[in-house]
Length: 165
Image (cartoon, rainbow, N blue to C red; front, side, top):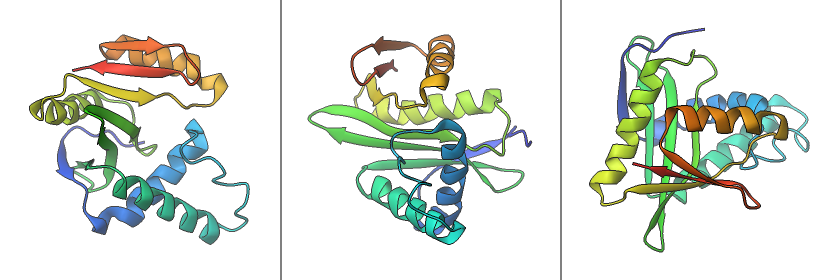
């Protein structure tokens, strides 16, 4: 696994669609988010599955006003992705991920704080999200979020979180 020691946070560009879709597909295999549900069940070949992820990734990007990727400066590979959607005066983050090719490192937290800071500059002090992980990983994920971020968890159905930025 790689370690991202130096990164750049940049607005998403269409030239990253293929790599981003592939990285999200790998992330989905581990995390099992509901956003990309049905990712493998109906698609028998890699080509079909990748086409599905490419389509869903493009839909996600097109439906969000701010899409940011983190590039590892050493390898030039995508390290992370944030998608922010503004609706009814609130800021939502429908999808966020860290590439499975990289170890968890302090740079991931620095990049996420920087991405959240961009929303703060737009006047938001909260970012809302729905937590959609596999049941077995949800408790571990919630503990991770509580440890590293200033968040409020709402145990409704579905479970949601508010990042206080």
